[in-house]
Length: 173
Image (tube, rainbow, N blue to C red; front, top):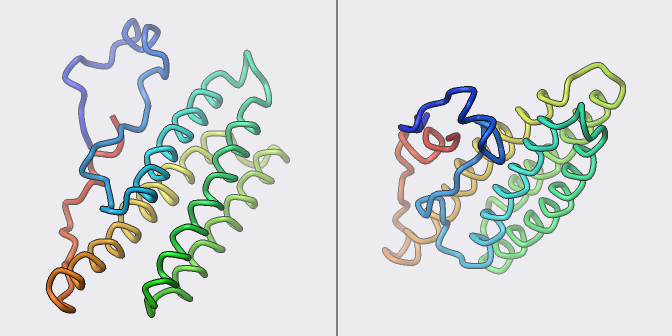
């Protein structure tokens, strides 16, 4: 976890646009593929919009749906871009990655439905997006894939191993 040196007082939280919780993009999260990297950065922005909508749900009811729908639409396009890149490079993990993408989108639909039925809170949805989609998939699985591709192209097939102290720990600010 990254701790902000400015502190987390209630006064500061009221001054911040996003409150005290927000996703912080670091250049280290870049995957080396410009188009995919821009999409990744946009997912952080959309995640922050969802956090803001969740925080403002009392004053702007239902805004979280629009924020989530925008994020999911972008996520679908992002997954298609990744899969096309894997297909272009004849990556043997394509089928597995497609299944992971389908599972994430299915789980997102399930969590959204549970929130709409009142069985879960909006914060359960935010947790799913931040943890499962961004931290575990985007910053772990996807980064490993792109590091593998870079390692294979740079060294004729030698894979680069992602260290255990990666960007996930610096995700939340």
